[in-house]
Image 1 (cartoon, rainbow, N blue to C red):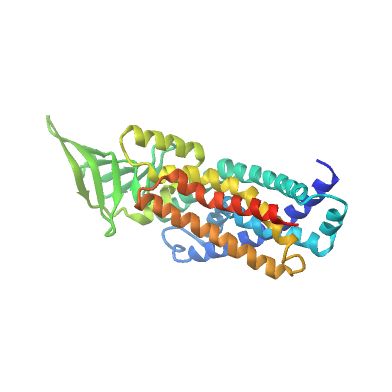
Image 2 (cartoon, rainbow, N blue to C red):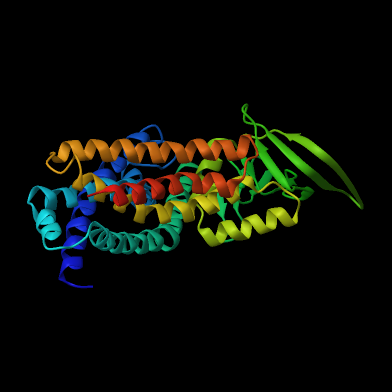
Length: 355
């Protein structure tokens, strides 16, 4: 890495830092505003809401990284273009591809930051945020390290396992107690789905009932289960597939497929995390043809607008394709990589056409 590389990388990273600070500040404000309805429930206070937002910032950083890199690269390289530094570099015989190589180095550094944040820092902090909020809002909840979440609903103890879909969970156990705290029955289900009315649909339901000296067992393919434990509790105690670490998603996919269950949502989330991380490099590269082209003399406002439009298009494309993978039973691998491949193709083609 020579002086030229360090100069370009420093300019690009400076732009990304400014943009990321602004985006995280706005995201934190919106998230805090969304906590206002929960403040006052149980022992959940304004200070708890601040803490919840703070613990979710690393996850926001990971999710916002591609769009922040695109806008930041446009601003950072744009300053070099307005100051004629890029023109001087080109006059000295440095090719556009050589400059793009320096930009790619900055992109790789940002990929390392994103991976460290998304795989190591964000998941445990987000889990801590949800756990602390649940404990503040619901005093009858407890957590096991790897045993899901527990909640008491009257004389019934419910154990909810990991989430495997938007409203589907990877199993449930139900313990029914008598008023004297004696065990009446134990039930389990391989999957548990939350319905719109707040009830549950349990699949592969098995129950064992204890009555004096007798034990009765029965099973049903599907069973309706009513409980006051609904989506608000679940949203605080489990993570969506796209919020899980890559290694956790891989293990969850293997377990679901071994049991003959649908793993489309998890498979899409797995490949989407990898593709979104790879997109960071191409988001940085996409700024190169713009600052050498029509936006060379443009102001920061124009570059920011272009970056926001492209970044939002990338974000919306990912979310739309996520729904398509689940609804239309399309290939999660193809759909997850489609936005990144389009971004990569656009970046490389435009750089090749830059003079």
